[in-house]
Image (cartoon, rainbow, N blue to C red; front, side, top):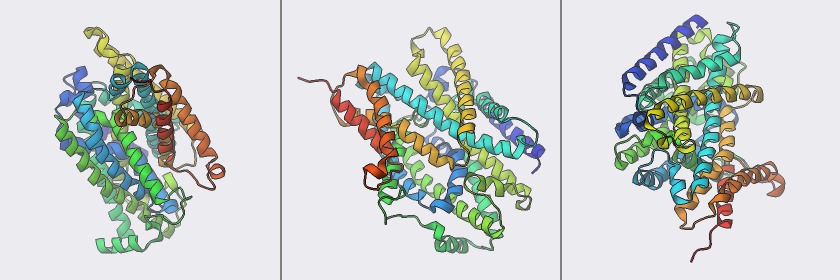
Length: 482
């Protein structure tokens, strides 16, 4: 595809999103922006959450990691499933009972204002990093495919990438995103299926059974790693890490929970979460199969590409055909933006509700302040993405994303676990100290784990360690009770 074709495709795609924004954003109220008036159909929320959960990182990094890590990522996905059940039957009942707009309000009611602000800031840092990683990936691909040939600097590419999100979310917020995420999830799944079909034909796999046999017999399709506990992909470590990643990055994340809180009631929100968790397992299997076929195709045709460059490089080859290339681009853009647009909205929500306490301001100022915060958050994302471009070069972004999540979400995990599992009160003013110390100690343990733990190498379970350290720290600052 020529750069002009790609620009035209992107323009049409975002034209559709802006049209949806116009139709859904006619009610420009804070209630619609933050909670979609609690009227979203659960099945639309569930389908849209698939794309938001996967994002451009999964779209690019999971297939690109198959050559090095086989199907080991599926162990993490199985952990996700059980984590989503915890969200559905432990966390959602709490959120609906308290009728929350921001889930971190729970920490204020349970412990006090310092805990509330600490949890909110932990989310803001976590989500800025997560959203920036996702948008960094799509900006890199757009730079490679379009803007390098036009002489456009990477910083301008990033500004365009974020500005497009702001354009279709600044009025409707979460109400718009419920519908745009549904459309974007559809494009993402169609893109994967079209690409798998092309690769199967190119590899002379003419039926589903032949594709299945090819995957089953490949050394890259190994799922379970049970031999060496020191292996970062060891099953128990990966499974538990996946479970806690889903609890924290979904259940304790304003971004993902804001969608759930748009459902009419708790029962519908639980139906959304359970159905979403089942479908997500099969969708991730599709991405792993795609990665295996991409690797085989690259080997067969002498294509020198790996990790996050594998899928984009093959998808844009002339012999792939303009149709497959077009679906790849649509899928990538849909996957990246379905996650990033809701991140922009949830960051705006959390900053407005939790940090500046928008509900305490005069009614006539609230909408104006919300729109200013929306612009501010967009600028912060642009700066962080440009910073990432100088820090990360030859990496698989999904693994870096999970590493970062282990440090930033750990304090949230410890705070919510202590609040739900105990009845103790704490010395609230010291909570921020625990939330700073726990990630630092976790980092030190991770850096020296091989020496300290007799060869044991920590993987994604750094999140569990961080959460546990936060929990233990909160025990130390308990109040004496009569």
